[in-house]
Image (cartoon, one colour):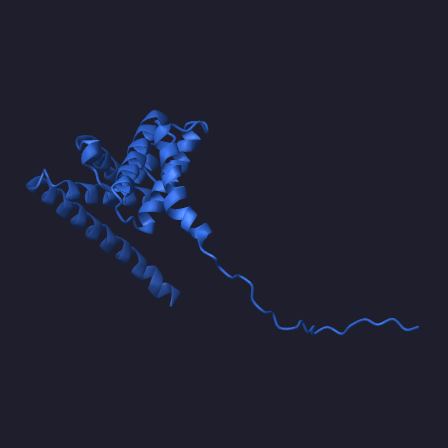
Length: 186
């Protein structure tokens, strides 16, 4: 069985590479046809950065993602995950750029929260991760956008949690030990 899997493994890797190349080519062709489609370009950035992080090496995918990200005006990006992934890419290499990207992502979250949009848990979790990373990069001296972010999170997500009355008490059955009890003889 192991011999069969060992023989099959290179073929699977080869087919995966072909599939990845076809998907990349399809994305690039779509972007070439629709250069003003911001949603498509954001999907492409996420695709490229996920591939980059999966392989943990500087790759063609990372270069493509950075080029696309840099060519889109920050104000047009409406997906927090794009900011999160780009911030992760820049982290450790260019801290000023990382701070700027994370700050833009936090500002986007704050804008959506002010508009009373319903935010999914994934959206909030990514924003929270960005906020913590940004807080660390700013040496724990938060800027206005971070202060506003934490106020929003406290008000919209934590306060309702603490306001709800939950009954966490439950009845335990009497404890019966499987071990014999020690008795002292008088």
